Length: 191
Image (tube, rainbow, N blue to C red; front, side):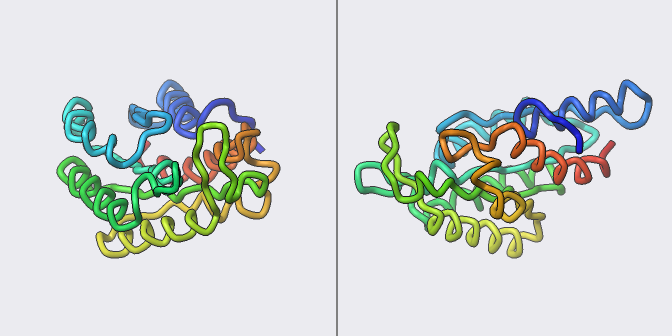
């Protein structure tokens, strides 16, 4: 078992850099463009500019990891309803397709039992029922657009109570480690 520190994208960054410095791969520059608390609405505003700014002539690989903020319920309303979420992800995929043939949709993680259906201090309520529904949307888009799906949900599900941090939403160090072990073979193909 490798020991990892940082989010899964940070781990991939360090891994790719190490391989490159060892002379064992092409240079792969990874950017984590996620913003805490952002929904697909925010993503769509930034995405064209972010992709254009980082476009590589050697090709691009795009991971879209969104939905945990969209599916939350705040003040009785879903932050981004299912149909809107679906349309936003499709729009994001269409933006990404201008820059990449290699697009991965990343599943939303399960949430901890102790916050499932509970309004937390941020005022947000999340449920595993919604996580499953939004992941189903991601799977359907993956199939419809011939993309690839990274199933972190099932990788973490059985041990979620020990792999999620105290907030019940984000992975802890062990959880990120498991996610990185799943993602490393994906980036290996590009190194």
